[in-house]
Amino acid sequence: MTDNAGTPLDESKNNETGIILGLKYAPVKGLIIAPNLKTIPYEDSDRDALTYYRINFELKI
Image 1 (cartoon, rainbow, N blue to C red):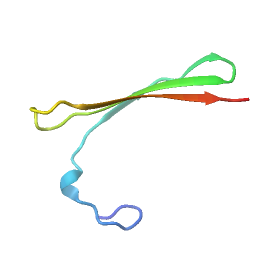
Image 2 (image 1 turned 30 degrees about the vertical axis):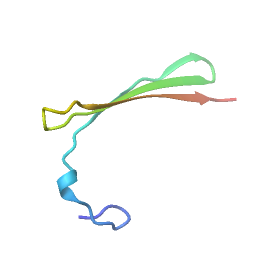
Image 3 (image 1 turned 120 degrees about the vertical axis):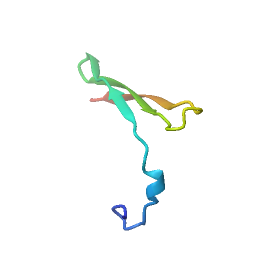
Image 4 (image 1 turned 180 degrees about the horizontal axis):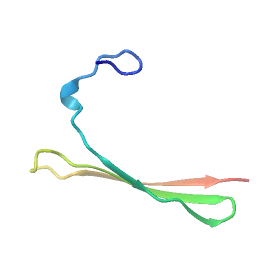
């Protein structure tokens, strides 16, 4: 199996399952704030899940 660029994929590393959640909030005209949460749990229960928090801002002038 290869990716879009033709690079071979290591299928042993392709067993991650993640969740991505996000919201869009427009407090005023021309401004959008979008907080996002991404979490990737590990199959090995001894390790904590990776969790990322990000906030995106979009300003239209």
